[in-house]
Length: 80
View 1 (cartoon, rainbow, N blue to C red):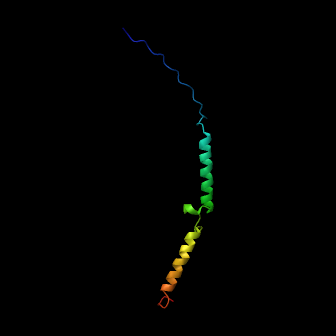
View 2: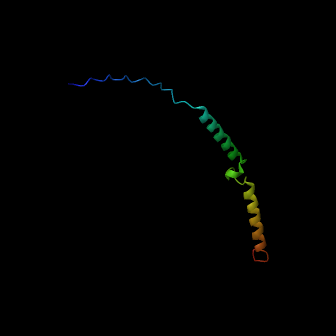
């Protein structure tokens, strides 16, 4: 006994402009990421360690302390 043939499914026409669906959760995540990135770029997010050059207050304070220590160490030397 031969098998019954299965009907062939017609290929559906896909809309070339359809990319996908963005859910509300994905939109919220993208908004948070954009807000975080803008804070990092503006130098307001000090915890990230990012931002423009020398915008981190802790880094500047550390550099000033280091310069002070080196200045005290070099007092009386031939470096003047």
